[in-house]
Amino acid sequence: MAVDLQHLSDRIEIEDCLKRYAHLIDSGQPQCVADAVFTEDADITLGGVHVVGRKAIKESLTGMMGQIAGVSHNITNVLIEVKGDEAEALSRIIGWHWFARPDADPFAAADLVAVGAYQDRLRRTAEGWRIYHRRGMNFGTGVGIGTVTEDLKPVFQGMWGRVPQWPVEQG
Image (cartoon, rainbow, N blue to C red; front, side, top):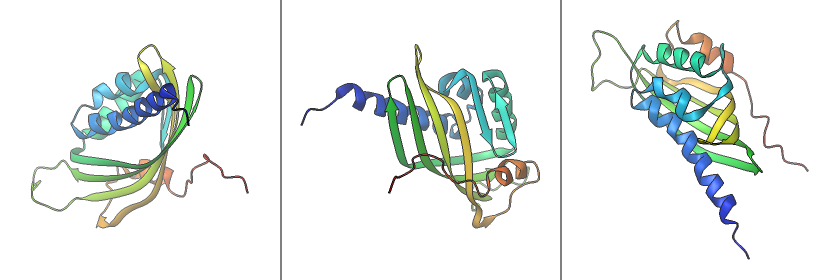
């Protein structure tokens, strides 16, 4: 059985792109996400938040993260289909959130856990694989831990009830 090294390389680079998003958000670098993860014309919908273009993505993510003291995005169950210079990816996410507030306790339990998924379309660019379309889904917010702040409710509420549209099994 022949191994398609380009296909394997593409899959690794795409998964790295998905993980780079989580790393930059989690390490307090939301201002870097737009350039490092998305195409210039990227269109993303995270629930009630819909933005187009790197500038809008940078402003939106930086604003959201201003409310967060700490976060950990855990990306799992990644499915990828490469079609030449474009690809589709579906990944599950568990996001642990600690909100920024004056009385924050670094030893406190998470304020909010959100469980969902990202459905992405990616394009091979001169900069490497980049997401040009992202659609967030929310399968559950809180999961027995915490409540969503009023400012973040549109994000999670808008993703509620969404299910992946790709991949679809025939049968």
